[in-house]
Amino acid sequence: QVQLVESGGGLVQAGGSLRLSCAASGRFRRINTMGWYRQAPGKQRELVAAITAGGSTNYADSVKGRFTISRDNTKRTVYLQMNSLKPEDTAVYYCNARLVVEIYEYAYWGQGTQVTVSS
Image (cartoon, rainbow, N blue to C red; front, side, top):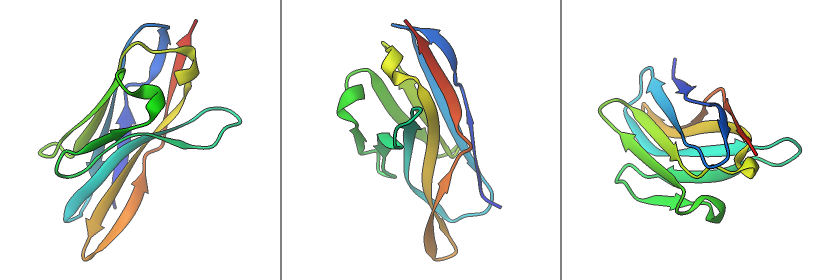
């Protein structure tokens, strides 16, 4: 059974930093694109950052220059380093990974981790 397990959320003051991690476990052939999404209360889930298997990245405009996504393929883990956090970054952050199981690619989601930034 494939699982994505997230860690690293919490409460931080504005201007502070947090690092999120998401590890994939289970049986699959390959991890393609991995990413982080977030959902604030009353808002739709939005893409924060994504990274391909080859290391290409893209970011939401609101986090460019502050957040960095990276991955360690040997550990099957994706990271999100969040610096200069703002109250508007407060949300539940979800890991997403596109995994090849047998011959098909499927999208998997983590359980979500709360990030709260106080002003």
